[in-house]
Length: 254
Image (spheres, rainbow, N blue to C red):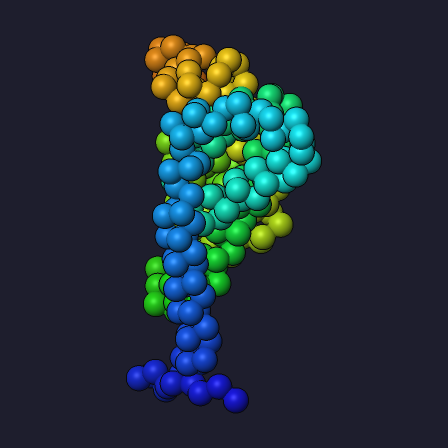
């Protein structure tokens, strides 16, 4: 039987055994992330991979399924552990697997990685956050219970919001895991398609390494794409605001 400590108000706090397990898991996740980044960070960079272009193409020809599976797991690891480099990897997957296969891989791998990060945040931090700030977050959680999918979809469409921040913050809420999965899958699809297309349109890895998405899109076009995604993400919010502001209450209730 695990020991429980008693808080000053007389209520039982989190079991000590559970707290130890969470601390141990957090230590494992952090250590794994640091080890992966230390060991493979340079080897996953576009600069390094550009020097291995011939070997990469040969490996794809010799072992297409194995390479595809390894790329999928690598992308899941980077996003699930919230390591830097997801954008560069998206461009790389577009160049390596071309548009359709690249979109398929990145879309599902990024969603799986995001869900892993989401679940880690929920298991490690949510209980403590709710216990200490539950009353302050009550209204926020009630809004998410009603429209969590709506807000998550909006956040996923706006590229200005960091990927890992959404994963961690949403893990602290009460949104269902399945809802988080499918909304993220749909919400990230447009941005995924743009970056995979950019990578698939670059003739060689050296060009991709040196110029990135700028090899396909001019700075003006990249700015326009960013603005378009922001407007796309804000449009549902604007429509909802206008409906709440001007539509008859009976229409909103229905």
